[in-house]
Each structure stands twice: as structure tokens, then as C-alpha cells.
Amino acid sequence: MVFSDSQIQELNSKVQAFQEQGVVDEDIGTLTTPIPMTIEAVSEHAEARMKKRGITKEDAQQYIDKAMVMFEQSGAERRLYVSDDGNSAVQVEGSELKTAYSAEDFDDGMKAIIDEVKKYE
Image (cartoon, rainbow, N blue to C red; front, top):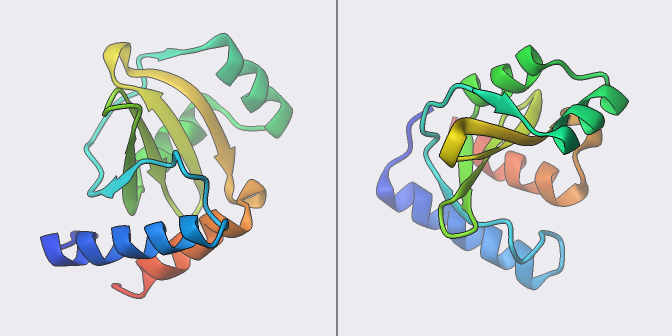
């Protein structure tokens, strides 16, 4: 899925409205088109969370590969990839996976974001 600049602006406005309503966390970041990335390392935290959630490194990579949108976080040092199947958060330096979770763990805010993104399909 490729978005125009105006569509990205519209989606960021929707995310901001969700933040103002308290539906989405204030520090989710800036929505943009996904930048391809390959997971090179997995943090201890990510390993523990993935084990608890029944997610593999391959699942986390698939969330990145199939991402509809991405959020740049922490001054673009971290990326949150958003797909229908799940999300992966990756530290840009070292391509280290920080956490991943499947769609089963989406909160109302993430579901609202995905619903908005799908309106552009």
C-alpha cells in the first residue's frame, strides 16, 4: 500500500484526533510509509514477550514485511511497523527487535488506526 503525501497528512491528523480523545498513546510517533527492514537482532525483552505471546522471529519479520504503515518513534530511532497480523517495534541502529505482538493483542487505539488506514485501500 502506497500513500500520497496528502493521505499521510490526513492519517496523521486522524491519529492526532485519537490522541486527543485518549484512544491512542501520545508517544506513538509519526505515521509514514513503511521503510523495509530486516531484523538483525532480538532484545531480551522482545524474546521474553514473544515467547509469552507465542510469536516467532519469523512472525515479527512478517509483520514488518506486510506493514501497511509505520510510526517513526523516539526521534526516528525506533520504528513501529503496523500490519493486519501484528506489529513489530524495531530499533533502527542495529535493526534490533524491541517487541512484537499479534493482532489478538491490539488495543482499541490500534484497531482504530488500522480501520482508518484500510479506508485508503
